[in-house]
Length: 116
Image (cartoon, rainbow, N blue to C red; front, side, top):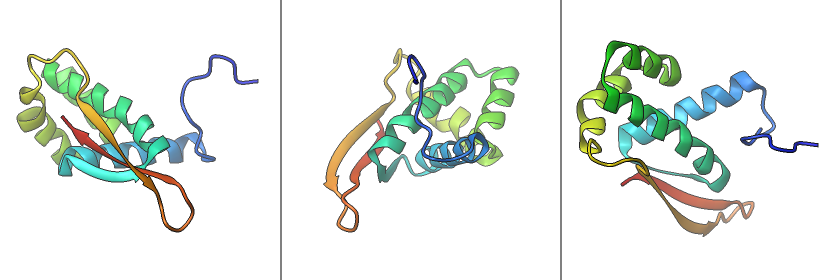
């Protein structure tokens, strides 16, 4: 039983899951709006919000933690320079999920996830 276990497994190994979430987070921070499945959007929301919180801190240790989380130095640079200063006075809730309906092929629930 999975009582009080956080997160979704997506039928992947932990390394694959970390790469999936960091890739989605990088795409969201780069384009500021992406279309994906509902479960993936709900999982990537926590990664992006943690990254923006690190960007708001702005020190060297936070930058190194963000590089370890996102694995892309250009995205981390954009996060610390452009994205995080926009949310300086906001205490949280940096993303929004908008439901689009089921996908034509398999009926999977599709959403837009975007930065507020």
